[in-house]
Length: 257
Image 1 (tube, rainbow, N blue to C red):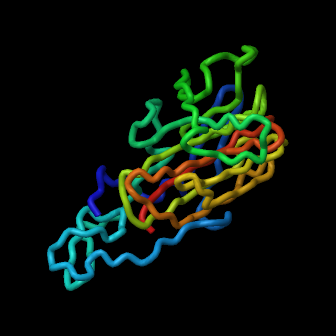
Image 2 (cartoon, one colour):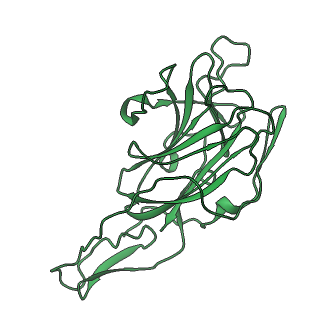
């Protein structure tokens, strides 16, 4: 499969990250054990070379091969390399749409049973000083201030003035079988009520995980997903009942399966 941009080293979710945010100090742990969470998606077998002559271009469903052709009825890739095609930390920027990443929130309000609809519920956040994405660049004390935010490593939901769930969105520029490596743990040592993370692929939840307040280890999971050009991969963070002490590390690296 012809990839549309250069490869990046896979494995950055295992690194030790740290972040200092305002008056708080947030430090993630050093993780190396995948697992946890539920859900996933598995693609049906694809036979793109059935009846095709040798040399016919095909898609081998590997997001990390640059080209693939039919040989003896089998689609095989060349220039195979370890790669990641998207990294929420490595690709982070303060520009909407850069490297296919967008930053927004879902104004869920008080309707806790309402499901997220990507086409209508994604509201772009504003880029604010200090490398923050927020609903508005205002200071605490302003009536419109909200704790909803996204940084390179962190997300924080809000319950005041209403429920706002931060949404980190990536739109795929590759197709094939892939894996999503996720890290969900609390970055605040306080006594908040925890957070719930959800991974959606084109609006369908394929993984969900809830951690308690102060859980600095959390869960690291590797989930199989299937990508097409334009597939929307989104990470939502739910603050549950309260927003206090809910600063959360929530990251994703998408690479080969």
